[in-house]
Amino acid sequence: MSNLRDSKVARWTALVFLAFAMFCAYIFMDILSPVKSILETTRGWDSTAFGFYAGSETFLNVFIFFLIFAGIILDKMGVRFTALLSGAVMLLGAAINWYSVTEMFAGTGLEAWFNHNLNYIPGFDELGVSPFYRGMPASAKCASVGFMIFGCGVEMAGITVSRGIVKWFRGKEMALAMGSEMALARLGVASCMILSPLIAKANILGGANVSHSVAFGLLLLIIAFIMFIAYFFMDKRLDAQTGEAEEKDDPFKVSDIRKILSSSGFWLVALLCVLYYSAIFPFQKYAVNMLQCNLGFTETQAGTVFAVFPLLAAAITPFLGNFIDRKGKAASMLILGSVFLIVCHLTFAFILPMFRPAVSETGEILGAASKGGVVLALTTILILGASFSLVPASLWPSVPKLVDRKVIGSAYALIFWIQNIGLWLFPVLIGKILTSRNQDIIQSTVIKDEYKPVLYNYTWPLVMLACLGGAALILGFVLKIVDKKQKLGLELPNIKA
Image (cartoon, one colour):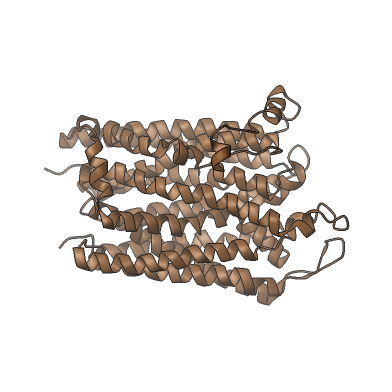
């Protein structure tokens, strides 16, 4: 007997609800990235503070193991409950994040509290993994707390959406569905890169204000929560038709985790994930500022140019997903994506700075970026977008081939947790490297403060990210060998004839 899952219209409608929610979440995730230089001049956040803020998104997921608990909640309570919970958590964290960068926060008792507290956290400081440091601006500390909470919600939403797609598309167009969801999420990143600087600089209540951008992101998260509510009722109707109980009736067992961790294929995919995404998402946080520093762009110009990256990824990811559904070759695509990644970061590091306009003694950029520099930047960003399509389109649909059906939620959670270690660590490292390698600019008494945030040298952070791509390339070859020996089916199509 047919049900909603057998209807193409119904299952793709369910996907739209899930994907649009993630579209909104991805906009908020990077809402402050394109306005890093404004944060530095109006809120006193230097590169180190911004790096700690950017890394805070994944802090609770990594060190409090929230993502592991999220996977257990997903397997035990089901997609519907976890979707609503993740939406509510994202909203709470986003609201705190927004308040911390508003004028309302300045001069309050809360600002004073953050100034005098969280400068030392026993245990975390000794291990060198504290999410705060002495001298970190109070607004950055408070925003980091909000971003930590938001990060719990968005990563929970990520594994929930992946599990929901598996539920609705198993044996059907699963890679195409996952690719389409990722494509819409990438559109969220592109929209953020273009809109955030425009909204922050808009003459609303006078002057540039990053809180306006964050308020826009908060409004979108309210819409995301509504999308999860719509999905809730649709998914409930599907279970009523099929007679299936939500996953909570299938109790979670610790032995299931051991079963997942015993799979060499799982570990290779998880390590590939952390290496690859650590070279992409932390870079996104700094990409606009990197283009400003290397080519003399304004925030708006740099954001518009970098938006080509997620736009291309959004355009071709569904086609790659469809190819994998019908032809396979997922492991091969992981290797090709890693090669593209290495080439792009090395180009950003060593070739793009050659096209930087001259700078006066006071730090003022003299002239506009050359046409050659703009063309090179766009070309490199396009290749990076192709890489960002190849890897996710092949990575995520491979997970159901590696683990039992009833622990897919936990498997995705474990992969996301491992990934989150890199997403916490590398934004912090980039910020610290930028600060340490640019002391001549930061401490200069000749260069004007307003120009300093767009004069940094990004070479060594980019080399570090290229090295991550190199490690991912090696693991990609190993995965292909293991797939062939163990017959994991990663090179086989998802749609069975």
